[in-house]
Structure formats: structure tokens, C-alpha cells
Amino acid sequence: MNAFHPIDVILHKRDGLALSDEEIRGFIRAIVERTPDCQLVTDAQIAALLMAIFLQGLDSRELATLTSAMRSSGDVFDAAPLKTFMVDKHSTGGVGDKTSLLIAPILAAAGLAHLTDEGVPGICVPMISGRSLGHTGGTLDKLETIPGFNSQIDLKQLAETLRICGAALIGQTPRIVPADRTLYALRDHTGTVESPFLITASIMSKKLAESLNALVLDVKVGSGAFMPTYERSQQLATLMVETGEAAGTHTVALLTGMDEPLGRFSGNWVEVWECVDIMQGRWHPMSADLIELSNILAGWMLHLAGRAPSPEAGSEMADSILRSGDAYKAWLRIVQAQGGDISVFEDPAAHHKPAAKRVLKAEQTGYLSSMNCKQAGWAVQRLGAGRTKPGDPVSAHAGIESHVKLGSRIERGQALFTLFSEDEALLEEPEQMLRAALSIGQTPPKLLPLVREVVSTESIQRQK
Ligand code: URA
Image (cartoon, rainbow, N blue to C red; front, side, top):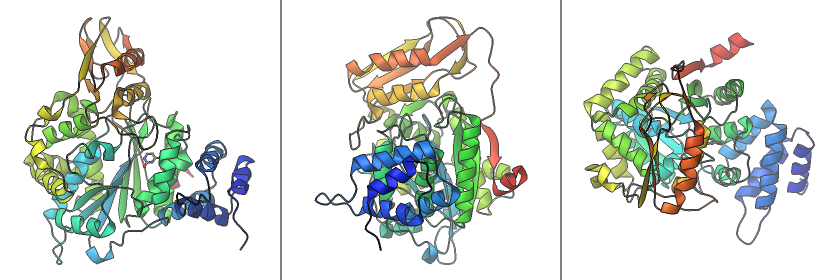
């Protein structure tokens, strides 16, 4: 075998050539085999290849090879001994997007209600999630605001948690998809997040490492989506559905609106608080879109798992699981199994302790007609909820509360958002960013449904 030179791979992709399978696998191997004393490939070289892929793209063979090399860069979960139906959902990233925190317990409750002959929940959700990326929040950062919560569990603990709870919420670890851990962190700081190829490889490598039977993808469209146009979001959805199906996982993607922060809060602990409120039966009007989307996505998962005759029937089932309190019971089980202190859920509002607060008020009367949601997401990150470099801690208490939604009638002087931070000095810039992100018009805007389109193998075939 020829010696491996990372620079050759970078030059080939930079110059628009297709990479061989050997080059792609060699590069991913070099990333995960690095030790502090032996850097087979440097961060600068990894970032250079990311940028080359960002600019030149990948063909379908390269994408399949990259995804499978990343998936196999660590341990892969063997779900066969559980003899259950493995299903998951993943979002391409949003602002205030906390559906995972509701969906995992909803599905877990559905699974616990029907145990297999071996006593395992009939549906299991092994959710491998990520940290904040670019302007979007990360499920792990939110979960880790729960004292004691351990997202870094190994595969043996994952199997045990699924057996007891029907769901687990975990992160990439040095053992599970370690290549994505490195690539994800570098992409966040090198302007290489918004590539449909890199997003597909990142998401699908994690999901395929879970050995899923079915996967529901929430592909965002609109001003807060990574993809700049509807067509690019469609392309991303198609790439992910094709990659999932080629690997034997029944995959469906929903294109959903990300034109404003989802739900009431955006941040870290505040998002956990919002979900706990919902699961405990306190439904705030600002959470309506979050509840709707969570039920729709959970409905698709229940349908693909054979528990509901249609996605719509699944959505109704999800709604009643949420209302019955069963999702909350499942949530407590999951958090406890992963070491979290569930006493914080007795009064979640009391655990929100930002040192500084500011209310952004309307300067004119009218209707909230549009929002630059990406800008709103960056404002949340800059309040302290995100990181400026890999490994930085994130603030548990930073974030925003939305008091209005697109289409809301607004009176001059009315509170639009409350900003929270742990540092007074961090409020100024995000306040300006949020103000600039809003448009107030004199007529009510035309509002679009949350789900714009469903992309499946069948819909892709119809397009061809
Ligand atoms: N979520 C991921 O896991 N990876 C991405 O690249 C984007 C969203």
C-alpha cells in the first residue's frame, strides 16, 4: 500500500477531482488515529479538506464512502440482541429547536407500553446528538445543564439504558463516531458548516452507527436554516434519504420551517425548562409550534415503527402520550438512568439564574412580518449559549424568551424578546442583532405551514 499523504487528498479535492475510496478512508483513519505526540494529519489540514469539500462538493460514491468511513471510525451499536424496533429522528439544526427532548420520551413511553417477549420496550430510540453548531443550539449542551447528566455513555450503557427506558440521549464520544467529533468542532470555526455533503456525512454517520430500522429527518428551510435556499434544503433532504436507504435504514425527511425560533425559549437550560413545563402539562402559548412539530415528527416515527396506520394517527397518539403525563414519566426514567438529578424538574423556573436580563421592546406598531432567524440564533450564541472555539464551556442560563411570533400584532413599546446572559456586557451586541433581525410591517404576513414537504424514496423516484 502507498504511504498516505494528507496533502495529496487536499490538493485533489481543491482541484475538483473525485477522491478515491482509499483517500477518503485514509484521511478519516488519520484523523482518529491522532495522538498528542503523533499528528498524522493536522487541524489545519483537516480544515483545508473541509473547505475544499465545501467548495467542490462530493459525488454520490464519495459521499457514501465518507459517511461509511465516519460511521466505522469508532464502535457501531449492535442492536440485534435487543430484538426491538430501532427508530430515531435528527434535525439539521435550528434555533430553539428542542423537539428531541420531547420526542425521545414520547417514543420511549410508546415503547414501554408494549414490551417484547424479552421484556424490552417494543420501540427504542438511541439518540446520538450534537453540540451547538454555528448559529444553532445543540441537544447535548441543553441536556448537560441538568446536574449530573452524563451524555458520554458507552455502548454497553446505551444498551442497558434502552432496555430500561426505551430511549437514551447521548453524544459522540471518543468511541462512537469519533471522526465526526473532530470534524464537527472544526467545521464550527472554519465557515464550513453549510455544506449539504458535510451535513449529510455528519448526521448520517451518527445515525447509521445506531443500527436503525427507521429514521425521520427534520430538514430546516427558511431564514434560520443552514441551507440558504429551499432548493438546497431539498437537495440536502434527498442526499440524506438516499444515503439512509442505501445503508438499509428506512429514511423519510420532512422539510420544516425555521423562520423564527421554535417555541418559547432559545438557549440551554431554558429549553429544558420549556420541555419540562410541557411534559408536566403547563402549555405556554409560545410553545404551540414546538408541540405541533414534536407531535408531527413523533407521529412519523410511530408510523414507521408500525404503531400507527398513518403519520397523522401517529401524531394524535404522540399528543395523547404527551398530555397523559406518560412522556414525563419516561423522561424522568431516562434522565435518572443517565445520572441526572431529577429534583431540578420540581421547579424548573427556579433554576434559571441569569446574572443579567434585558427586554427588547417594539419601536413601532404593526405586525411581526419576518425575521432573520439565523441572526437571532447568532444573538443567542453570543449571549453565551454557544462557544467561540472548540471545547469552550457554554452558559446554562444565557438565551432568549420570545414574546411574539410571526404574524403577531405588535404595539409600540411592547416586549418582543427578553435576553438573558451571565454577563451584562454580553447583552448589547445581541440586542442590536435581534433588533436588526426583525421586520415590522403594516399588514399581517402570509404564514406558511410548519411542514412544507415530505421527501421519501417514493417522492425522489417521482421527481426522476
Ligand atoms: N447536525 C449534525 O449532527 N451535523 C451537522 O452537520 C448539522 C446538524
